[in-house]
Image 1 (cartoon, rainbow, N blue to C red):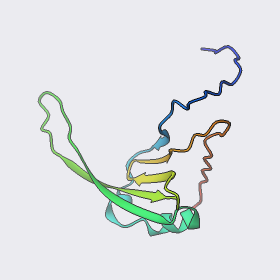
Image 2 (cartoon, helix red, strand yellow):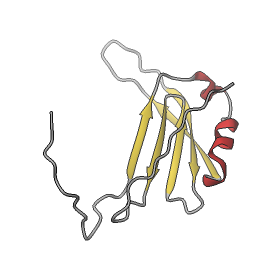
Image 3 (tube, rainbow, N blue to C red):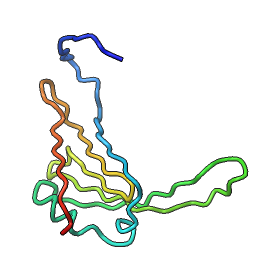
Image 4 (cartoon, rainbow, N blue to C red):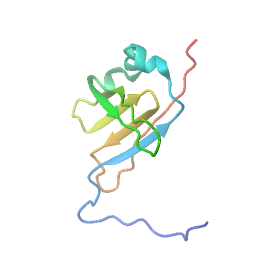
Length: 115
């Protein structure tokens, strides 16, 4: 499906409260098993604050026993707390509260070999 070319519209009042870019991947059990210190080192001084949250998920369905699963989400925040990188065992997400007029979502992702 192709979309017609249109000009960029900048609203007087920004209608976006929060913008998220989330990348999902197959579950990495090591993230559940240990604290992601290497990930924190890779984030560097740009995201100096770290918070953790335990999230409980329930499965619903007919004939399926709903066993809760607990996972830890690690939130790496900028000093002004306007940008957040969340790491979990099956996704990484970048969130911002700062979508000022004329600015694009500044996301830089890089993949580095663990060796």
